[in-house]
Length: 105
Image (cartoon, rainbow, N blue to C red; front, top):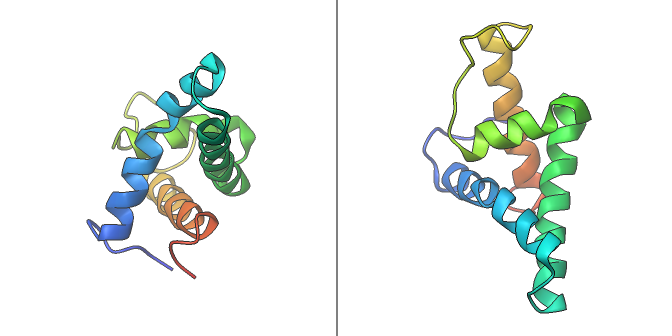
């Protein structure tokens, strides 16, 4: 399944993933109520597991950063596969996140 570019689901996924880092910092600080921290852990765990299932744990953080930061294919040769494969994996990650968060079937 492919998400339509600029669809409401894709925009929502990008926004949720963009907040991944802030939630991780708040979890580490432990200054928020336990219920909020539990929700933050839920979202971050679901996002990380969905992405790691597709690209592996070694690249999960990179893809989470790229999705949340709206970054494209790195031109510096940092990735060892083609631009088309990178974008296919990135799209698959978005679909995986949407499924993990029950936004799509």
